[in-house]
Amino acid sequence: MKFFKHIMLLLLISICMMLVITGCGGATSNYDNGHKAEETALETSNTEQKNSLSTPDGFSEVKKFIDSTGREIEVPVHPQKIASLEFTGYLIALGVKPVATSPRFLKEPFLEFVEGAEDLGYPASLEKLLEVDPDLIIAPDYLTPEQVEAYEKIAPVVLLKWSETNNLNRLTALADLLDRQDEEIQWLKSYEKLVEETRERLTTFLQPGETATVFYAWGNTINLLAPQVISTLFDDVGFEPSERMKQRLDKDKDFASETISKEGVIEYAADRMFFIAEGELGESLLKELQEGVLKTLPAVQEGKMYLLDPNWYSFEPVLLEWQLNDAVDILTREKKAKE
View (cartoon, rainbow, N blue to C red):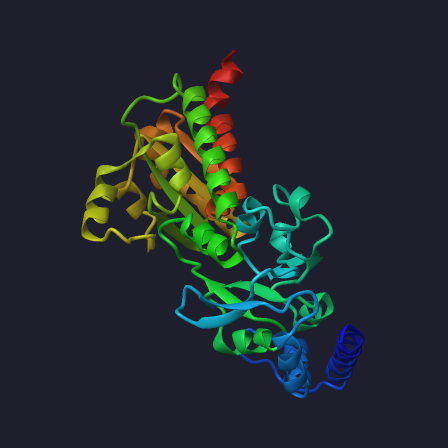
């Protein structure tokens, strides 16, 4: 079975390459020509792929699992080779190393945990997935139906919420999927201890009841982020939302983010102002704000405006740990410099 499977994979990859070279297929939603050619090749072996999924080498036991979109999927009870298009930091917290993942996880602070994992590219390459031959694929729910259908021809696909008001819900979902509840409890206890240590380290640097607001500058837009999105600063470090934010949350407790105007930043002014600037355009927009509306805000005048690394706009457990340590560095930096 394994020999036959490898032959089929090599044959599929060869067909894909021939189709790409001859210019077969046109780009459709989120697919380039290479993806379209790969999908065409996959169609020719649909039966063989589904047969291999029913009794993959290395396991025979399967179970039903309902993912975040309500899809019921048949998945292996003990998957040996997981490809994670997103959410790799959650797998790491559960002690699972994927065989392949998105390029953003192949750098710090993830790199030491995923060394040797294959780079799937973004969006994930069908050819790469065929090469690693996973028995389970973890993916975000923003994938198009066409993408999900293509990936399902390689392995079962479990979709998790991309927009989530509780960052740890995904950890619980994956723990249930992989039967890693003990590892989930262990990580949560470890993180709780880190939160306590962080608050102790910041005792003399923060006043009780201090408010904070977080903004995300990307492209030409400014996004206001809810406290539950950047939960590290609020639930863990201990900042309070501004009065304007509290009013917003009273009206919509599930509010996560919203694009606002430059002047809208003033509405959500707080004791501490945090900005995440993504890419050159985001940095340019932030500079424009600093030279304009931000000058009038007390927090900026008092040196209580902070630039956060883009890693703050991600909610993997590995990054939550990183964010706590970074918060200490950021909030104590000025006093340390004076000393």
